[in-house]
Image: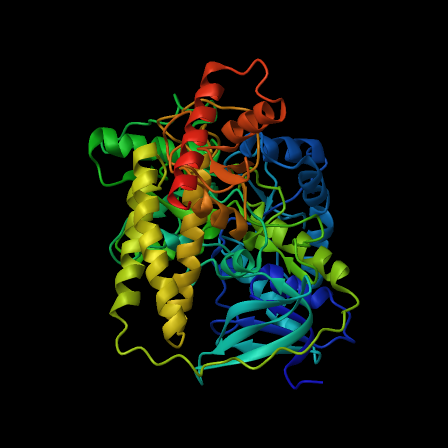
Length: 593
């Protein structure tokens, strides 16, 4: 057996990954891989808490209804039921691991309320819930002799043999050596990809590594166009990533514009406590309408003692920047926060590839739909992390990976390409693929990101990899998936709002694979025969032996049905499309004759 063999390998050391590791049978040898020291995962940045029905006045049906309402008709009801009904057991398990949840004077769990929730159901630890959960789980992890930590490692690519994942390659950031790791099962728990945007509320290394690796391995990636922008990130030059928890509004904080006026009431009946997509879009609209750089959160409804006790971290962080709560209003702006899409999995975290699992933000179980309900993220991490552990047992014998081949590559002479593309990619996504989108912006973004992707691929073929390069590579692929999903969704739903198609259509998921992008490149046409818009991945079909493309899956399906029917009673637009394709095929045939 190779010295780098593990029964189970977990890539990512946030709540989902560690919950899975702690739930595995201790007979197995488990490795946890993370890019930074243990405890620095994005999970530690979560402030609000964990949504759970733990009060007799609440119900699973209400939690499920709130989740599906926020998800804008795109949630998988089975996933919603599984996770929400698993919440009380998840809270009990966390408490057993030593998580010090806040309680009231009677010892009952203290419950907060956040946007989109019809009741108080947020179990929390002050305003540092994610950090407290992670600290408690790490303390348990360090007592397990069967678990080995591989910190300062970044995974490069997965290995798939005969349709099964048998491990992966990882770059040791201390030695700069790429090593193979064979595993009986692999769990991707690497978090989201919010750092694809210029302004984000997440750590710098939230770079979509798991999503990028799974995409390159052939997995389906679902609903990447739904990127949640947290409505209230502190607007301050020294703190571009400090969140002002949604729970502040749950305790009566009010959003005001520069003139001190409330402005969210007309956007939604819940006003400041509407789902995040609506609040973020309303703030964005208010800023554009008034030309302001930010809006403000006013906490004057309660005294200083309350805010210091309920939100000690936020109060201290703001005070360090000269903002006194509640005397001063807090300047806030929306920032990229959470990816509601990700690697397609079933309800035990299984991806399209045997032996490969995903959990947490990197996965798409169907829980979040088109918009995540506040505080459902840590909940999903715990519930799904533990379910994945059940699915992982026992491990399957896997063929040992070959050594990493670096014979035909060299050390890059300079890193300016990586640094330049990092900055350009984020600015493109922020300017063209942000809170409010349009066809023109999305098309511009695709052209520019495609050029960056080609440059990255060329660099990868010729040079040794580095952490910055690998993160850029993964972010660029996530950017492509976000853009392509946004282009193909000819409606506005949840977190995806396109001014050129503001209405809502029949609910459907966006599912994209590497093969879909390859087919798009092979299509004989560049524009959709119905709309003249550019064709998108996942919207191609075969016509007379050649691949033809469309601007969205509905166009493709309509044309495919007409072809299957032999064009009987075909509409004028379908007959015109047939003529265009026939002409292209005839031209192609003459060129190759």
